[in-house]
Image (tube, rainbow, N blue to C red; front, side, top):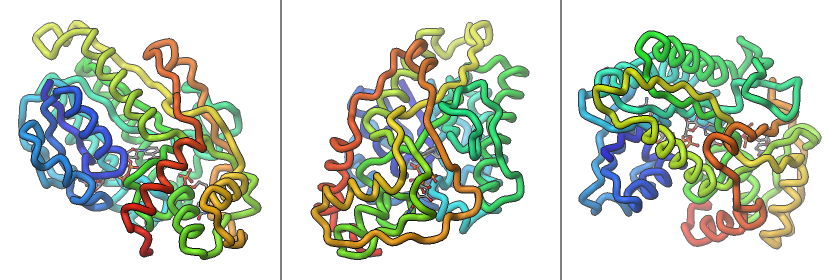
Length: 326
Ligand code: NAD
Ligand code: UDP
């Protein structure tokens, strides 16, 4: 298949591009390197089935025939999006519109990378797809949370009007090699602090929870989506008769307090660093755990990589890549 991956030079996108190429697909990576990097896709550049288009998704997208589009382009780390709030809102509104227009014109199946952040600071746990969320519309995370919620609303409106085949994947915390050492997220922060002998910075008292998914499991879920959408009909004239809208949580249900994550990483890095406590950022969700029944029933998805196994790979990667400077 001919597949467009927006945000393909980012952390998750670069793993997706590599995996799609391995499965024999033709991959067009579209990125403007706002938070991604050329280094992430350097190993793919010699593959004749790989193409890079440097483009900002806020600008109308070049027309093209695609069988499927994965839309991932957006800042994702709280440090990134709170430094670029207006950009983040426009990327997740105008950018999503441009992707939807392209998908309609190309009659392509579409996966939109949404997020567990649409649930905000959730009042129910685990979070099911039916939960409407608890989001502060004017807080420091709102550029991302409300941006992604708008992107979902726009997608559903397009789907209702045009009968597209589209999947909204609500992605929960995902980690793996190629996260930027300085992107501010907990896993790269703690690993790089531990390896550099610096204090591990736990925000708040560290009792807030997250559920961490290793990137290989997430990519497996993305590819199961492709398989399912393709099963529902090729991108041909019959596609309008086969509309599809799925909203599905993707992640790993193993939930743990952030302090426990810091302690685990410190031990795995055999580090003498101390753990220090810093103020909890505004609206930092206190709990997060996906209900994955839909992903299991519809996709046959189940995460396979345990937290320690995944962390060991990322620690080795940061050691080997030399990306320790902050
Ligand atoms: P990332 O920042 O590593 O990758 C995002 C990519 O999008 C980068 O390569 C960046 O340069 C590109 N991009 C940003 N703005 C762009 C624009 N205007 N035009 C073109 N390209 C642009 O982030 P990631 O962790 O790989 O996340 C990928 C997607 O998954 C994002 O949509 C994010 O919201 C979603 N997501 C990720 C997680 C996670 O834990 N990693 C969790 C929930 C949702
Ligand atoms: N966090 C932390 N120290 C850090 C970075 C993050 O305690 O150096 C906390 C953060 O406050 C949040 C959790 O770890 O409660 C996960 O943060 P991350 O930025 O990885 O993802 P998100 O908040 O988007 O889930």
